[in-house]
Image 1 (cartoon, one colour):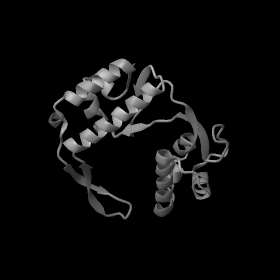
Image 2 (tube, one colour):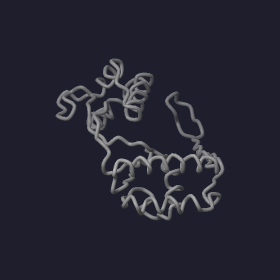
Image 3 (cartoon, helix red, strand yellow):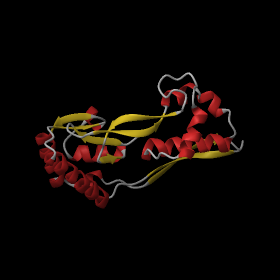
Image 4 (cartoon, helix red, strand yellow):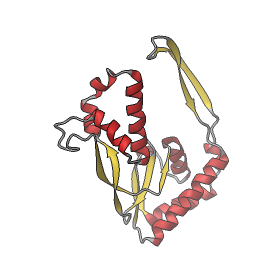
Length: 193
């Protein structure tokens, strides 16, 4: 999940989402489905969770995860939920790099809150910091073979994208625009989680 940055005066909005309670309750049933059906359900969940795309097809697919007795979604498998509109999201590793450049450490790399004036000062620190200390190379790690759905073994693989100086500069530009927007909206506190 990405780290979301938001501020105290951001409006809430209703967004289309899947019912995570139904998904958790029916996980064994879902895993027993044919792979193509199971895969389509989880592709839809990912699309809805990330982009909140509401279509009749997505509603129909999410109905497959529904628990008819669910008191949250009322047996639909989908619902509308209130969420704070976030103008900036960064991948966990990228957000941690930016927060370290700003001078944050420990638990503050995962979530935190700070007065906007302190956040702005920390941002200026990051602009003046040596960005190369957060630059990383793209790496691939291989693990022992694991059985996949087709019953053949395949080596597990983890690909971690690198973080270039240019990407860090782009993220700082994006964060700078976010701080400017928060200031214009008279925000007092910046949160991230």
